[in-house]
Image (cartoon, one colour):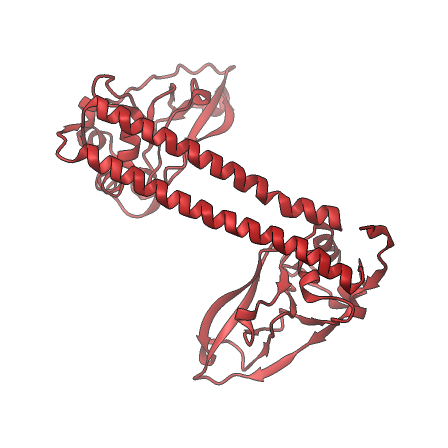
Length: 380
């Protein structure tokens, strides 16, 4: 399709502003609507009684109308009202427009508005100080867009909608795969720990501290540990001068790592090959499993189970957030299940299979996630 032949049409010639103001009844429930940024769509903000809205009137929106956030239009906050939100309400900070459907299909506008250049169009239509930037509706409506005939719009919509439906189906499949993997791993773990003896971490995986002697002219690449079992990440390098009096400890591949500040919320990981040789402060504890007793992968899985997180929480006294710190002695005294090494290795192999399945699923999802932007770029 030759987009160069599409006529340029003023938005104001194909969009009409609508403001269906209604008076709010204090005892009636209303669905307040809002818009997510970067083309993420129109969503329900909350259901609230009229008495809970700081205004006596609101604008009623209808399905297939185009709604814009004045404040965040420059960040891609606009979209088409879905059928499920027909009759919802918004404030005057959300201008509402109806498309002239003989020239512009609302669904076509919905896809077109997800392009980078449409976001730029809204950005240059906004003005104001740093904290008071607002969309100027007159500027917005004076911009032009490439607009094909309605039959061409329908053909484009068919292709984009089909691709979107395929991505949604793949995402649902990915969620189902993840649930199945979790179920399989949980069942396998419960199988090998049932009736297994327990032993203290000081015996199973004692703390190992490899202190680093600081050279003021050297550089030290730091390692971090994400919460919720999401692994390690690389921090920027520190110069010897930046380190100052901070104590650093070397991390080696295979270490079982704990961020003592957030261990209670699953900041537990295993140092990967690319993490070898990096450093962590005293807030990162490195434990090395006794090779004849346990594996790092098995222990990491245990600490991310409900029981493991509970034990870490009990070993991390204090209030919320950074006031909860995992104690070294408490960690060393913490008892962990100790099935046979053969059973642990079997379970590690099961984890490896699950990891490969997750990587395959994530790779497919990433490829599909790139499909829509590529199609939009090709079309527009």
